[in-house]
Image (cartoon, rainbow, N blue to C red; front, side):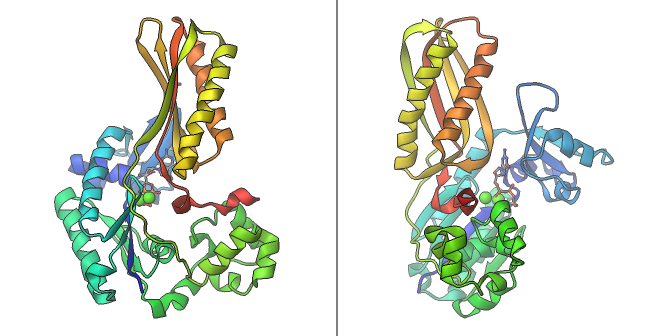
Length: 362
Ligand code: DGT
Ligand code: CA
Ligand code: CA
């Protein structure tokens, strides 16, 4: 029997802002990614729990969030500072690593720890260790996180989502069934809006209800691979090992063009080739990405960059190409110098398995 922890920092970017400015703790805080169109165009990356009470959510346009908080005079809208969040993330990951037999980085604010050996596979020891870890993060980083403890990755992930923020949820093996049966199907990682609606039409909303479907029916609805994942998930079965993984910050490719140019067609073709090449690395590492950027080294060797945060993590080459192309159009709109080198990078990487979405099936 294994013991696995899943740890997720609470309202991560917004909490990072709170720890460098304690006065934010009592106000609604929204971390914004302003687009370069100026004004309030852009999206909310995340918000603290006070702002969430007013209905602010990740991914929401900044304008929407402002209108929800219009009655609140002290609401704060801060620009995202990714370099600073990475620094905090790094410190958090180092603390977590010191508690793990095997450490698997999932994303900036999230990791799995296999702690089987150091707890002798004993849940009482595991809960104690999880509490110690939370305490150390609280004293050293002044940050809260939420932890799920169980005998596999899937259950621990679901458990860490069960009670937030500052939660600690333990699912002992014999409690697996009763724990899962009280949950909604959307609590299973990978079941998003589309799949949820599909099952809703079939009058299936809870895990207990979903469990009544046999594997043949599931196969017909979801296809074989997703069906077996869901069939096991509703039973709390997951054999995936915690596999040692450190953060990969980003992948990038840059090439020098045959001639300096600002011709859209020529640059598009090069961009396409770079994307294909970069995509090879992304898929070799089985990563999803959430941010895409392009870079020009211009004829005077100065740099110009554009980047964009996607709505959801993806591993799609079409999305990579499409976003890079969009950025190319944007970058060329006011281009004066010709371009000498052209580059593409992806960041906000995460593991495909950790970010599985069966919605893509429909
Ligand atoms: P929570 O629910 O307390 O774990 O809150 P967060 O904000 O930590 O949410 P999580 O764990 O899903 O995401 C971690 C960070 O990733 C979050 O602080 C900001 C970023 N993020 C999440 N969703 C979005 C989104 O839709 N758009 C953008 N731009 N960034 C996002
Ligand atoms: Ca989080
Ligand atoms: Ca997270």
